[in-house]
Image 1 (cartoon, rainbow, N blue to C red):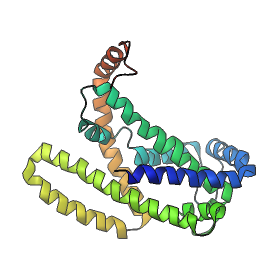
Image 2 (image 1 turned 120 degrees about the horizontal axis):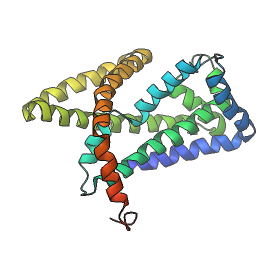
Image 3 (image 1 turned 135 degrees about the horizontal axis):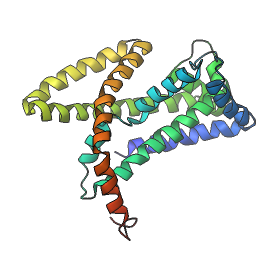
Image 4 (image 1 turned 180 degrees about the vertical axis):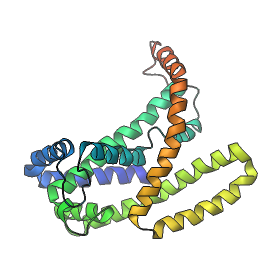
Length: 243
């Protein structure tokens, strides 16, 4: 359980080190993000945002894949927490989006831009990030950081999504469906590992969309209860210090 936080800290430190080395390029990198996102001009290499619509589409798709916001999966893990304060647990769960997307993904994007990794032919995905970190760290540290990070994140993600699916199958069909689900899940994991990145991204986007649609409808229907519970909880004088 403690491996992932350690890797997150190591990864953030690595990206910060790269940004320090290329600090003079940082203002231009930030400007590039906004100009290419809203000007409608296409960027070469790894960036696919040729228009505002496409930029938003890709951003939302990758953001959802990163932090699972709106999918309803986070509630499955949160429901397993030992607490009698659902609002407090929800606030804790919200930190995932901030740390995962606003911090880690932003640092990664900036590192890729300032090092020019996005302009390198044939680089995409993890190899692009590894190349970017290597430019600032050297000595193979960038490659090691990304390789170990991908292994840790991939393994824990597999475990997490397996757990989500098990809980759903158990709810819908009972415990008898758990073992067949595990077998099918294992096969799908293998297929995903040997399939091209474009196919995996496309399938993931479709699957996430199919999960998000009913969940967002449910959120709208339950929004009144969420607002009421949140207001009731925050109306307590000591809600910030409650255990």
